[in-house]
Amino acid sequence: MNYIRHLAGFFDRVAKDDRLGPLHISMYVSLFQFWNASRFKNPISISRSELMRVSKICSKATYHKCIKELNEYGYLHYQPSFNPIRGSLVYLFNFESADEQLNERWHTKAETASGLVEEPYINKTNTINNKQAKEQAHENTSSDFDGTNPQEKKPIARSRGEGRKTKPGGASMPLPASVNEVHSFFEKEKSTKHEAEKFYNYFQSNGWKVGGRAPMKDWQAAARNWLLNSQKYETKKPSLHATTAKDYAEPL
Image (cartoon, rainbow, N blue to C red; front, side):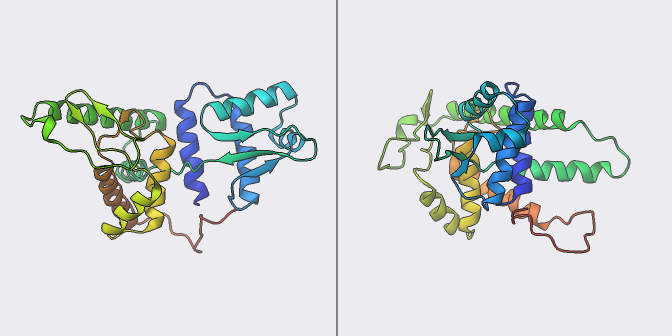
């Protein structure tokens, strides 16, 4: 796992989540350090006293409030242990940033290198999300009045009913039942299982929404866009010249 992209994805979520405060962030960063020490294996066993010491949280009530709210808001999965010998378990999710957002930031920095003033980071992110939401709304509206008969559209057969979303005027493509289905699709597109897992984990964590707001209509089309954007990003060269190669997928 690339820990720099993971932290970038986490702070992207924090910037848009008004429910979080400094203590939530301090606790999550402390948990991330424990996760890093275990080489990003889930779950990790935690000690309340040790976590309070690292995160600088002095109140037990505040500790329990923060970790329960992080669990409730979808930043981690917490399994408390009432055994004084056995520690509680915490599962952390992969929040690697979407390649589309990374590409957008790279282009913005390249364009402003000539002397233009770069827009604030948060405003730029909101602009990207608003643009994606408008494009998704236009796509949904046009599909309702394209002259086709919704009854003629046959959904792909599923072994189970999960992941099926409908909209007025027709049915959208069912979401993938598992990561194996995404593996098969990416293999047909001449891509790797690693890239398929990145795509699946990202959209699984945000509820399969485009731009974090609009429900996904066609996951295969989104996967093709994901691959196109990842290929574009890989062809870009960084503006800084590093003297040594650094693998940011390794733990600290």
